[in-house]
Image 1 (cartoon, one colour):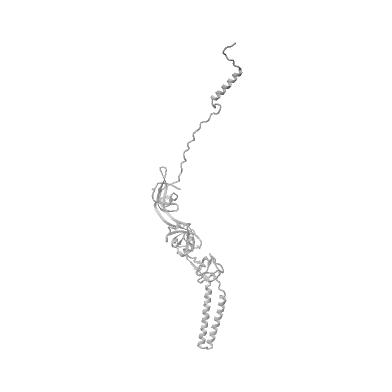
Image 2: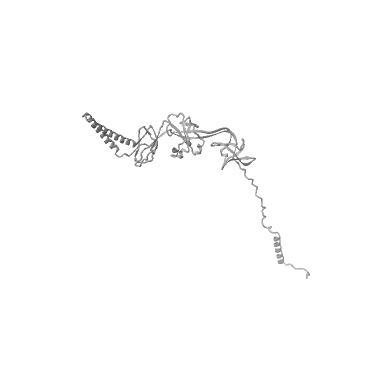
Length: 347
């Protein structure tokens, strides 16, 4: 007999061991799970350095010029028209660009039976002249002879009138030249008085017509400015003889889109073997200055009433207002606001 001791069976020992394992798991937390990786801070990214295209302010010569290709056109032309209303256009005998001779018929209006009536009037006049000769030969009295003379005069007047009508029904070229304009009036339509039907230009005197892309390109071109031209591979000197400001109002209204953007250059000695429509290059210097402060044109920035540039000072971008002078196609003269060597940012 054993006193004061408990007796443990194998079953009880097994239960106690299970409790011990559970307790150790609970006390150990998640020791069976994989360990969590520490959170790393994102790497520091430095902002990219901005690269500006820059240019230095320099001193040099700046030239503003108008330069391009023009066309040889006649110096003068003749406007041909009818001076009376009511005629219907019968036929046009010439076309634009055609060379015509002096006296050549270019157009005519309907005259009805006028040609037949002229033939009949010529016969009547001949008969009257024969009667007058007979009266003189037969010794007719003075009164009969006077009546005979008046009959002849009347028929002559009538024939002259009809011949004038026939002549007025035709438009003929006053010169040897080239047709530069033909009316759009069609056969059978009424021809208004004093409306140009043809323009015929002389071909022995030519000028260069230059038309700019924009009217502002010619703003500084003045009458009498020197021009350098190249025609048929030969360099020839010339002068500006017409600008948009010199075109008569009535001419300007006929084609404002052309005349507002065009100048005429007269060449001192036109090369031989050139003709209407040939191409010629021109150059007109409108402004020039030496020892000017110059920046590239794409460095100039503008807003309403303000001209300015962006400059780099101690790696910092700043805006500086400037006063400009001559502006060419590629450069700008700076009058105030910058110094030689300053660095500006280009657009």
